Length: 466
Image (cartoon, rainbow, N blue to C red):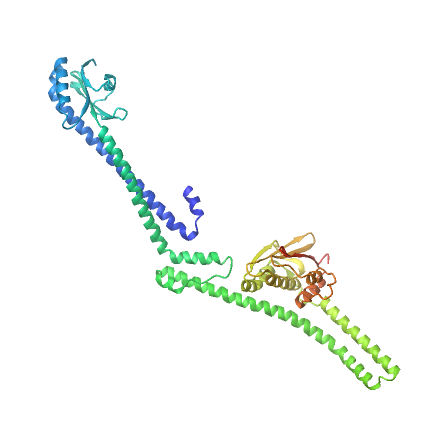
């Protein structure tokens, strides 16, 4: 569980090498420690055999005295044993009669008979407190008595402890080296796959980048096929973005073209009458009656052109009455992404629509497309443009926000429906947006200023309430 949580914080490409390195390290340490424990058990068995050999020699010297219960002879044998310490060193010797009575003893002051009484025949018992190993033997099933020896193991314990510490440190060092080799080996073998994963992760912030062909040449055949497939996908995504950018430009140009064609067609006829009135004034302008008639015609013609332009801008929109749905917002994201990528802007979409809503799709798409493209231009490199859309009551509420320098005052007043300030710039795209909003009976509010960007909120009535 801990390992899984630890690996979850690592990049995906590093998880497998790290997990393999940790596994090699743990397995190496555990197997070595298990081998050391088995070796220690084997050493204890060998030491018990040495203790039995020691008792063989001691029994040969004192067994007769033990069977006779001769205390003086037993003590003399124990003294001779203590005098000869060439090999195994004893620290205590005890002889007990068949009834458990202590017959003779020779031991260090800190080893009393009470310790010897608890010794079990045939079992080597380590007494770490006193630094001795107790070993006992019964003769004739205990009928002839019992010998108990306390063998000195202090030096052996010190050496074993040093050996254990040294082997543990060496084991950890070797296991760490093996784990590092496993990590480096897997990291090297998984380098192409790691680069593919890095490219996929980078694609969340911008267009994906292909993996270098030289890296694919160094990889094995399955990994090389994966890299080639990834590079083909990257090229396909780029081509799709180029086509989406072209489609967005075509859609905007088509809308403006239809508007221009409508205006040209409707204005052409009044212009003919105006041209005739101007020609009449040039030829017969001195006649008051003719002049008044021509000026009246000019005034009415100009008024007619004004009405045509106003009505066209206010009510023009394509005749497509298809309802707006989630797919339109997905289309908008594809249409805006090329422009956002070109200027280094991130897009954040939060659309709460789950089905179509009763409002014309084409007009809303055109409004949002213009505002989103303007927001991308205003946000600048490294900025973010956010779009949220949902139904609130009987209105479709759309919010477009950017973290740019803020919308100019004239454009903000124009979008909100107020009269622009004298001398304020009038952008054609913003004018088209305002007229389309009018045709949708929509309301717009603008919150803009230096340092806090621009937030535009659109409230578009659904058709039943429009």
